Amino acid sequence: MSLRINDTAPDFTADTTEGRINFHEWIGDGYVVLFSHPKDFTPVCTTELGVMAGLADEFAKRNAKIIGISVDPVEDHHRWKADIESVSGNSVNYPMIGDGDLSVAKLYGMLPASDGSSSVGRTPMDNATVRSVFVVGPDKKIKLTLTYPMTTGRNFDELLRALDSIQLTANHQVATPANWVQGEDVIITPAVSNDEAKSRFGGFESVLPYLRKTRQPQ
Image (cartoon, rainbow, N blue to C red; front, side, top):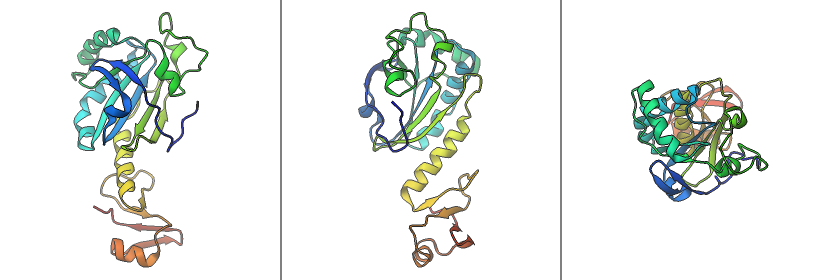
């Protein structure tokens, strides 16, 4: 199954390092970042989980929860957490989903249905496609997906930047240009007329007939 932006994020019930959860219930009325890993005790993923632990407060400021998933049982995750903290200095206080039967990875289209039902004996290369990030909104819809190769560590500052844009544009009829960061000018969407734009935003700059910029709304 191929998941696209605005699809409903598949719901599931699973064991995690913080206990058993129902995903949609656990999301609640905020955002969630679900980020996946092909195997415990792998070098790049160890650094990633540590960085995310260090950014937990930044995601919390944005009403966003963090949850990891790796194609291994919860017992292995608990042992892995010690390595993650020793490398990064950050304690992993967010849940990590155990996916020893591969069910969640398959549900999210990261592994084919034909890949069996056990993580036992599988190598990181067998699970190389379990390297996706999904941002899910309060409406349980997928807002963003990113997939990285195993050899490329993810940039989680970019994830924060994208989340800022997603939340801003959900509340105002604006879009964000390339490389936008908080506080910079934004683009007024075509659905807003010039007269409405003047009233709503207090003015704008017409860069092109179809490209109008204004200050970021608060």
